[in-house]
Length: 100
Image (tube, rainbow, N blue to C red):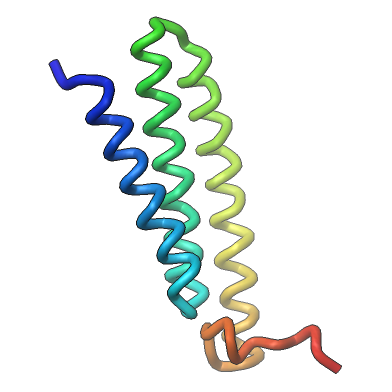
């Protein structure tokens, strides 16, 4: 049996990699994948605590998080494709549509 702490350490490492990716990278698609990685790290922590406490609450939260993440993926990728069609780049430094 794998200890609870190993799952939480893995979840923390995945979340940290996601945060570093969001802060360091400039490609919108990579940033989007890092956000998804952070969501999956939180899902792993929820499932870990749910199993430890013999409760289904964490798994229900994971179900809702995955539903929202799927909708976010569809909308986010559509926005990225639209930006690429307009600007021909997915670099977040080059995309400044809000400037006059």
